[in-house]
Image 1 (cartoon, rainbow, N blue to C red):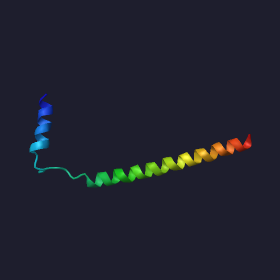
Image 2: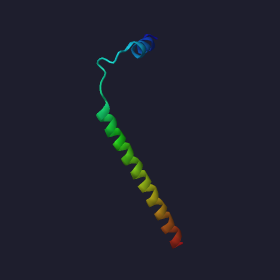
Image 3: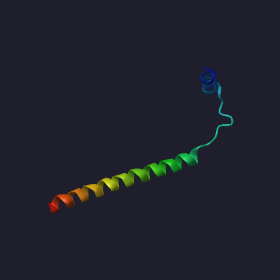
Image 4: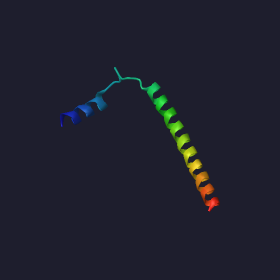
Length: 58
Protein backbone atom coordinates (compact mmCIF):
# COMPACT_ATOMS: atom_id res chain seq x y z
CA UNK A 1 0.00 0.00 0.00
CA UNK A 2 2.87 2.35 0.80
CA UNK A 3 4.29 1.78 -2.67
CA UNK A 4 1.06 2.99 -4.26
CA UNK A 5 0.95 6.07 -2.04
CA UNK A 6 4.59 6.85 -2.81
CA UNK A 7 3.94 6.49 -6.53
CA UNK A 8 1.05 8.97 -6.36
CA UNK A 9 3.25 11.33 -4.35
CA UNK A 10 5.96 11.12 -7.04
CA UNK A 11 3.43 11.76 -9.80
CA UNK A 12 1.66 14.74 -8.24
CA UNK A 13 4.43 16.34 -6.20
CA UNK A 14 7.37 15.68 -8.51
CA UNK A 15 8.93 18.75 -10.08
CA UNK A 16 11.11 16.93 -12.59
CA UNK A 17 14.42 17.34 -10.79
CA UNK A 18 16.62 14.32 -11.23
CA UNK A 19 14.51 12.85 -14.01
CA UNK A 20 16.47 10.76 -16.47
CA UNK A 21 16.41 11.62 -20.18
CA UNK A 22 15.43 8.57 -22.21
CA UNK A 23 15.49 10.30 -25.61
CA UNK A 24 18.33 8.22 -27.06
CA UNK A 25 16.83 4.95 -25.87
CA UNK A 26 13.42 5.94 -27.24
CA UNK A 27 14.95 6.78 -30.63
CA UNK A 28 16.76 3.44 -30.75
CA UNK A 29 13.58 1.63 -29.74
CA UNK A 30 11.58 3.45 -32.44
CA UNK A 31 14.20 2.58 -35.05
CA UNK A 32 14.20 -1.08 -33.98
CA UNK A 33 10.41 -1.13 -34.07
CA UNK A 34 10.37 0.32 -37.59
CA UNK A 35 12.94 -2.24 -38.74
CA UNK A 36 10.93 -5.04 -37.16
CA UNK A 37 7.76 -3.87 -38.93
CA UNK A 38 9.65 -3.76 -42.24
CA UNK A 39 11.12 -7.22 -41.68
CA UNK A 40 7.74 -8.72 -40.78
CA UNK A 41 6.16 -7.19 -43.89
CA UNK A 42 9.00 -8.63 -45.98
CA UNK A 43 8.50 -12.04 -44.39
CA UNK A 44 4.76 -11.90 -45.12
CA UNK A 45 5.47 -11.03 -48.76
CA UNK A 46 7.96 -13.91 -49.04
CA UNK A 47 5.44 -16.31 -47.50
CA UNK A 48 2.81 -15.20 -50.01
CA UNK A 49 5.23 -15.67 -52.91
CA UNK A 50 6.13 -19.13 -51.62
CA UNK A 51 2.46 -20.06 -51.24
CA UNK A 52 1.78 -18.87 -54.79
CA UNK A 53 4.75 -20.88 -56.08
CA UNK A 54 3.55 -24.01 -54.31
CA UNK A 55 0.01 -23.57 -55.67
CA UNK A 56 1.38 -23.08 -59.20
CA UNK A 57 3.31 -26.35 -59.04
CA UNK A 58 0.26 -28.40 -58.07
